[in-house]
Length: 367
Image 1: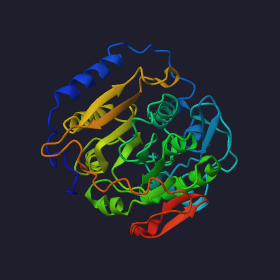
Image 2: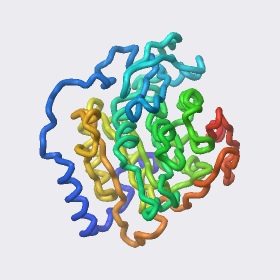
Image 3: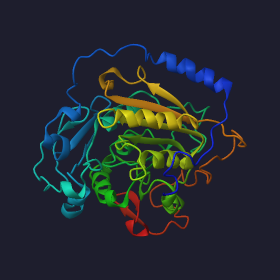
């Protein structure tokens, strides 16, 4: 079995009564005991749209009341993007509505049967709006982030797919830097979307890199550049689809990777669609609980984006036995490179770095 592909490869966290009390108060304030009013699907929910809107036409995120508009090409599979070099273009409504596009990509379902990596799902829409509109990432100058050293966090996105969450954070200036990761096959699609939105992105602050989950991705972790782990914030949306088995260990690999990349001061935000596999979502959160404090968010989510079929959680590392709360933790390596501007890439031996319309991307050939 692949390293990290088991639930039994890590030790439990050490209890901290003060942290537990604080989390209990936060959880009570989220009002989980209140039932959400069932008003039916909201018009932005992509799960209820037609095939072309969900999988082919461009998705448009109108953030902060439409002041910032991020356009995301979609494709029925990653290989469609690689062949065509782009996705559909077009305009759409607020949230995650589809745009009517001209160039439609040919279908290639067999090469990507889950149709997940190059599609914008509801979890990404909710997390993008929550993080950019709720002030969840805001810090006063007197309480800077541990790894960036400033009022904006260094952010890493796992399984970014279309890059919706990362590009939303960068376009709205909610992050000091954003490292956008996924499997190497997904990088061409990420590059398309980063380039299409380059005018919105702060120069030199968005970095694309391949990252496999689990021990086999350790080389990818070592090559992350110019910002290295630990990160102030890790984000991910719609990352859990398959029930854990030795053949589909994705959820165990995700937990292993979160523990590898998180430092003691890292905050993780996950937005998980309950349409795909709600039982595995619950199983994952139970497995994560010995290592992370798990806060389920509801009232914190702006009402427009609060729906019963998307669960947003905040994970914060528990103090580990034998580790200092002030130590570097699992993701030792520091947050080098947070202050780079355009053209100041510190590769740290990461191999070739290419620039795509102002967006730095670690070359796929390194994988």
